[in-house]
Image (cartoon, one colour):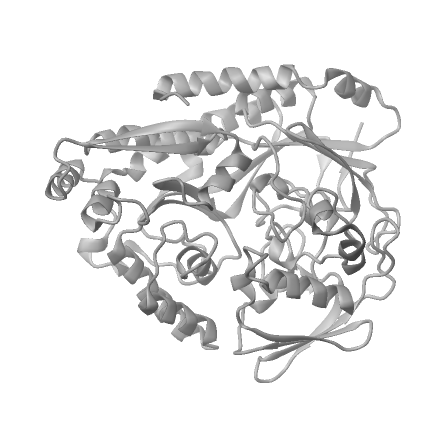
Length: 529
């Protein structure tokens, strides 16, 4: 694949995105637009395709408006908010033992799986949590490291015992973008096998899977037997449109009803002036540049520090506009355990100093410069930020070749550790522990840097095992300082999550915060006209 300049990259991505939009199956789109009496919402995601509709394997952002609509967790966040005041979902009630070690759930009776797979029961819960906990199968397994056992207590009772009290445990079981809590049908997996379930999902949610056309769309249809009440919409369609210009054009022509917006303040202002509704919500997305220590010369801390000194967060804010804030610390301020710049000793604070970076690179034996090559996602936010980093790294003497690939393929490559640098935007329940556990614990799927430290692992284990929030906060500080000392990560920028919809689309609630990176249409959603 050819080396790409910043200008060529931007122009090429725009042309390819518009071409892909124009060459999609227009006959289907026209027939859909002409359909009478069908309430349909079409949402465009910013990725070119999905990875998996089996939540065990799903972690591409394009799956955010799909899996949590088809499937559900035992509990849920209140509509439109990310809050610790969880509300019942597939579990109608639960109790927690006085010592915080045992969670006992009473499941809803009469909840029906889509298709012919019968009633949701406690056997499905045990099957699901056992599957998610399997380190040979699930990238989410670390979320359940603290689970001692999952026991069935009749068809509608489940008892989960923890090794130590965890005040944030219910977040693992909630319905939102994270796959770790969505319930799976044991009968469906037994009948179809895991391979078929990857792209042919079964759930209990308000909409059932109907059709998947690779790199084009997914169609979901109303689940008339939904326990929460009959959905107001007949269909939810998710279109794959990696080009922001293509999505914006489709919004203006009425081809789509909502979309994930580009991280661009000027674009958002223009869309607002055109009469579209802009929903900008938290918590923040943490955009981290991971440095892969498995590859030489990035195993040299002087090279890693040179890379860190090249990255200028202010330039990211200038590129992205008001949706972005330069990262002065590791974790966004909305997260429990987040630090301020002052919490770091002066030598570990984020700073931009390309001249000092050049000197470090020379000390490491690369005075004549260094060449690196990597793949990067075609998705606008990844592409724009990485092209900017390409320019910044040149200032310290690093020539970075960027090869553009589709977003799903990018995800497949970064977990195989083929990239020297890995840009990744992460969001989770606002608890810094979750981000650190899955990015820096030895063997974790998102441990892109390859750090393997018994000292850090012990710190992370202490955090998980502590029931005291003050102690957890102090341990989280120690962990973040240790990671900063290793220089395996460059925090770049925190961004919001701007979404855009037509005024005729109602979510059925006020959207204040969400972990879903896209709109997630529930049974409450409606469309007028």
